[in-house]
Image (cartoon, rainbow, N blue to C red; front, side, top):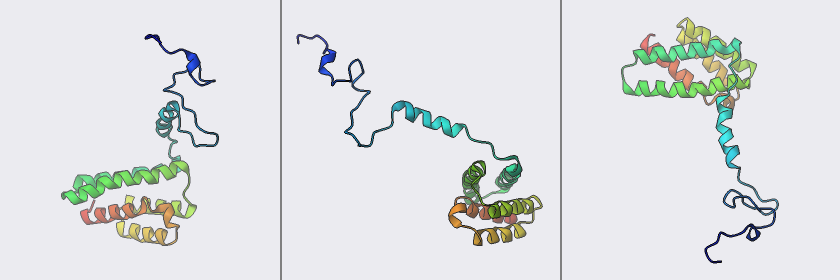
Length: 160
């Protein structure tokens, strides 16, 4: 060949003029890897989240405010870690509110808990929490209900 670049006729038919490192042939029916463009487009979908419906924004405001008040009052590192975790886990609740996938029973219970938290009646909030958990499909609430109980318990202990 004498140092000349390979010509296109050495590439498989249908691949001419394409960079061989960017294309890959798979046997018919074999799973194909997603393209680079597709992978780059996926994170953008996460950024473009839907808004939490207006009627449920009070939940986010109330629970976020509760976590913040507890964080300001908490002294010990273990409690601070639990509250940091709570902020992350409540994100699952907010995602479900955006997706509108929670049952009316759970939504009603969350709004009642929110009213209890706003009135600093954590004992009643914990009672409502227990009622919601026992009457719901746990897989629907497991990502956020346990931490909500932890936060109300901490708030009660700290008196915030």
